[in-house]
Length: 148
Picture 1 (tube, one colour):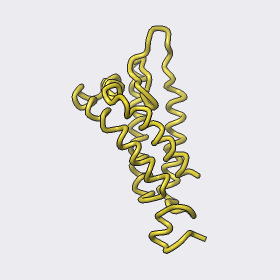
Picture 2 (cartoon, helix red, strand yellow):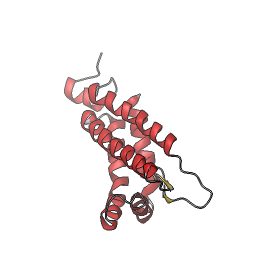
Picture 3 (cartoon, helix red, strand yellow):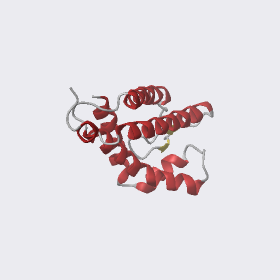
């Protein structure tokens, strides 16, 4: 179940951004942590990485690797949100869409975004330790069949 939840979140996040890679780049740039060109490039690459990680997790293929990469990415996201919060920036995280600076009157959702990412990080950690499940391709390929 952890594979499907984390994988589904990655696919949903990537798919929500893939239609407008420029907006995804602007969302990363809004954190003001990277030079503009690097942030724009990262924003254009992230949706594809998220979808790839999600598909690997859903299929249960290279699960430990995908979970470890997910953990690293989630730690970076948590650090980015914490940094924006600490510096008083008023941005949408861009996790499931365009993101960027918030309009007047809109409030950032840093607390709930951080809690969500910590919960996803816990799932990723679980999958690093217990990567193979009954219906994963890892189990079928490495054990010759489903895990009993």
